[in-house]
Amino acid sequence: MRNKLTLIAAAIALALGTSAQAADTKQIDQQHKAELEKCKDMKGNAKDVCKKEADGKHKVAKAEAEVKEHDTPKNRLKVHEAKAEAQYDVAKERCDDQKGDAKDACQKAAKAERDGAIAQARKASLDSEGRTKESRRKE
Image (tube, rainbow, N blue to C red; front, side):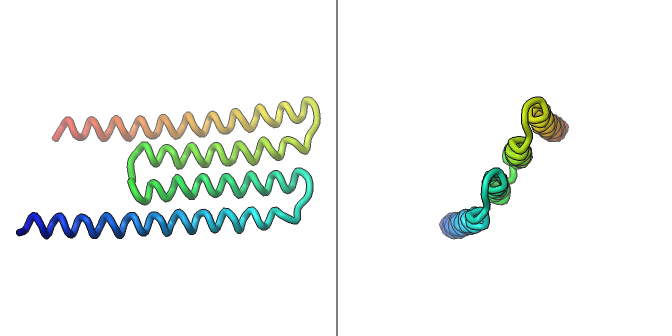
């Protein structure tokens, strides 16, 4: 009898969790649509930058929702990577306002910043994973 109650409680919790995740996803998608709507009246590269910013916020929000649902080192790393990619996409788009060597230098700097942020996030993730595995061994 006790096992049945536990199973029922687990099923209810799972259903509520799935419902909350669907609501979060729907809200994230609505926010993305609203952000893109703000870009509608813009022109040229400003419009492109606006769209990249909206897309980046969307990707980061989805990654953060995944962490909220399943807080794992891998999912936390995905958040950091999504943030780095979003910043890179926006920075690269802003580089389009420049020409020639200045544009190339701008894009290289944006890429280097992204690569550095991702490398740092991966190192921090590995460090925390290593500590976690080491703690488990000691127990």
